[in-house]
Length: 146
Image (tube, rainbow, N blue to C red):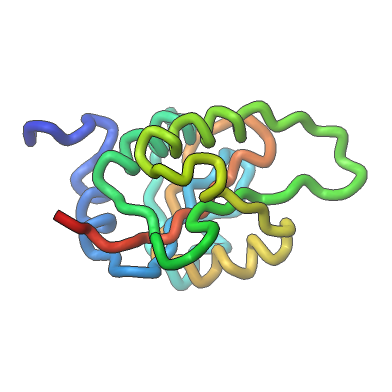
Protein backbone atom coordinates (compact mmCIF):
# COMPACT_ATOMS: atom_id res chain seq x y z
CA UNK A 1 0.00 0.00 0.00
CA UNK A 2 1.01 3.59 -0.55
CA UNK A 3 0.22 6.77 1.32
CA UNK A 4 -1.82 9.44 -0.44
CA UNK A 5 -3.00 7.21 -3.30
CA UNK A 6 -6.76 6.59 -3.53
CA UNK A 7 -7.41 2.93 -2.68
CA UNK A 8 -9.65 2.51 -5.74
CA UNK A 9 -6.57 2.89 -7.98
CA UNK A 10 -5.20 -0.63 -8.39
CA UNK A 11 -1.49 -1.27 -8.98
CA UNK A 12 -2.29 -2.16 -12.60
CA UNK A 13 -4.19 1.08 -13.14
CA UNK A 14 -1.50 3.19 -11.43
CA UNK A 15 1.13 1.63 -13.68
CA UNK A 16 -0.87 2.47 -16.81
CA UNK A 17 -1.53 6.05 -15.67
CA UNK A 18 2.20 6.51 -14.99
CA UNK A 19 3.16 5.06 -18.39
CA UNK A 20 0.88 7.43 -20.28
CA UNK A 21 2.48 10.49 -21.83
CA UNK A 22 1.29 13.95 -22.80
CA UNK A 23 -1.72 13.80 -25.17
CA UNK A 24 -2.39 10.10 -24.54
CA UNK A 25 -6.06 9.38 -23.99
CA UNK A 26 -7.84 7.33 -21.36
CA UNK A 27 -11.45 6.15 -21.62
CA UNK A 28 -13.44 5.44 -18.47
CA UNK A 29 -16.38 3.45 -19.80
CA UNK A 30 -19.80 2.58 -18.49
CA UNK A 31 -21.00 -1.00 -18.16
CA UNK A 32 -22.57 -1.02 -21.64
CA UNK A 33 -19.47 0.17 -23.49
CA UNK A 34 -17.84 -2.50 -25.70
CA UNK A 35 -14.47 -2.10 -23.95
CA UNK A 36 -12.93 -5.37 -25.13
CA UNK A 37 -13.73 -4.89 -28.80
CA UNK A 38 -12.86 -1.17 -28.77
CA UNK A 39 -9.68 -1.87 -26.82
CA UNK A 40 -8.09 -4.43 -29.12
CA UNK A 41 -5.12 -2.08 -29.60
CA UNK A 42 -5.28 -0.59 -26.11
CA UNK A 43 -4.81 -1.71 -22.55
CA UNK A 44 -8.16 -2.71 -21.04
CA UNK A 45 -8.44 -2.62 -17.27
CA UNK A 46 -11.49 -4.13 -15.57
CA UNK A 47 -12.92 -2.17 -12.66
CA UNK A 48 -16.23 -3.99 -12.34
CA UNK A 49 -18.14 -3.05 -9.22
CA UNK A 50 -17.01 0.56 -9.43
CA UNK A 51 -18.78 3.51 -11.00
CA UNK A 52 -17.29 6.15 -13.25
CA UNK A 53 -17.59 9.09 -10.80
CA UNK A 54 -15.47 7.52 -8.05
CA UNK A 55 -12.83 6.41 -10.56
CA UNK A 56 -12.80 9.81 -12.27
CA UNK A 57 -12.31 11.54 -8.93
CA UNK A 58 -9.47 9.21 -7.92
CA UNK A 59 -7.74 9.39 -11.31
CA UNK A 60 -7.83 13.18 -11.44
CA UNK A 61 -5.97 13.27 -8.12
CA UNK A 62 -2.89 11.91 -9.94
CA UNK A 63 -3.61 12.60 -13.64
CA UNK A 64 -3.15 16.09 -15.11
CA UNK A 65 -5.54 17.17 -17.85
CA UNK A 66 -4.03 18.56 -21.05
CA UNK A 67 -3.81 22.36 -20.93
CA UNK A 68 -2.88 22.62 -24.62
CA UNK A 69 -6.31 21.60 -25.88
CA UNK A 70 -9.60 23.37 -25.27
CA UNK A 71 -11.53 20.22 -24.27
CA UNK A 72 -9.30 17.61 -22.59
CA UNK A 73 -12.41 15.82 -21.33
CA UNK A 74 -15.00 14.48 -23.75
CA UNK A 75 -18.35 12.78 -23.22
CA UNK A 76 -20.26 10.57 -25.65
CA UNK A 77 -23.18 12.56 -27.09
CA UNK A 78 -26.68 11.19 -26.72
CA UNK A 79 -27.92 9.81 -30.04
CA UNK A 80 -30.63 11.91 -31.72
CA UNK A 81 -34.01 10.44 -30.82
CA UNK A 82 -32.81 8.85 -27.55
CA UNK A 83 -34.85 10.20 -24.66
CA UNK A 84 -32.08 9.74 -22.11
CA UNK A 85 -31.31 12.07 -19.22
CA UNK A 86 -27.62 12.44 -18.31
CA UNK A 87 -27.42 13.85 -14.77
CA UNK A 88 -24.12 12.01 -14.33
CA UNK A 89 -22.53 14.61 -16.64
CA UNK A 90 -23.18 17.26 -13.98
CA UNK A 91 -21.41 15.03 -11.47
CA UNK A 92 -18.43 14.75 -13.83
CA UNK A 93 -18.26 18.53 -14.23
CA UNK A 94 -18.28 19.00 -10.44
CA UNK A 95 -15.43 16.49 -10.09
CA UNK A 96 -13.43 18.05 -12.92
CA UNK A 97 -13.87 21.50 -11.32
CA UNK A 98 -12.06 20.22 -8.22
CA UNK A 99 -8.93 19.45 -10.24
CA UNK A 100 -8.94 21.82 -13.24
CA UNK A 101 -9.56 25.56 -13.06
CA UNK A 102 -11.44 25.46 -16.39
CA UNK A 103 -14.18 23.41 -14.74
CA UNK A 104 -17.08 22.61 -17.09
CA UNK A 105 -15.33 24.58 -19.86
CA UNK A 106 -12.81 21.71 -20.11
CA UNK A 107 -15.61 19.30 -21.08
CA UNK A 108 -16.77 18.66 -24.64
CA UNK A 109 -19.02 16.18 -26.39
CA UNK A 110 -18.22 13.76 -29.19
CA UNK A 111 -20.78 12.10 -31.45
CA UNK A 112 -21.25 8.44 -30.47
CA UNK A 113 -19.54 6.76 -33.44
CA UNK A 114 -16.71 9.29 -33.50
CA UNK A 115 -16.27 8.58 -29.77
CA UNK A 116 -15.95 4.86 -30.63
CA UNK A 117 -13.36 5.65 -33.32
CA UNK A 118 -11.33 7.76 -30.91
CA UNK A 119 -11.67 5.14 -28.16
CA UNK A 120 -10.05 2.59 -30.49
CA UNK A 121 -6.96 4.83 -30.48
CA UNK A 122 -6.91 5.38 -26.71
CA UNK A 123 -3.90 4.29 -24.69
CA UNK A 124 -6.18 2.53 -22.22
CA UNK A 125 -9.84 1.81 -21.51
CA UNK A 126 -11.14 1.29 -17.99
CA UNK A 127 -14.25 -0.89 -18.04
CA UNK A 128 -16.50 -0.09 -15.07
CA UNK A 129 -19.80 -1.39 -13.78
CA UNK A 130 -21.41 2.05 -14.18
CA UNK A 131 -25.13 1.64 -14.96
CA UNK A 132 -25.88 5.22 -16.04
CA UNK A 133 -26.43 5.55 -19.79
CA UNK A 134 -24.04 7.66 -21.87
CA UNK A 135 -21.65 7.70 -18.92
CA UNK A 136 -18.46 7.24 -20.97
CA UNK A 137 -15.75 9.83 -20.54
CA UNK A 138 -12.45 10.32 -22.38
CA UNK A 139 -9.53 12.14 -20.74
CA UNK A 140 -6.49 13.57 -22.50
CA UNK A 141 -3.37 13.60 -20.35
CA UNK A 142 -1.39 16.75 -19.79
CA UNK A 143 1.98 17.36 -18.20
CA UNK A 144 2.88 17.40 -14.53
CA UNK A 145 4.08 20.84 -13.50
CA UNK A 146 5.69 21.24 -10.08
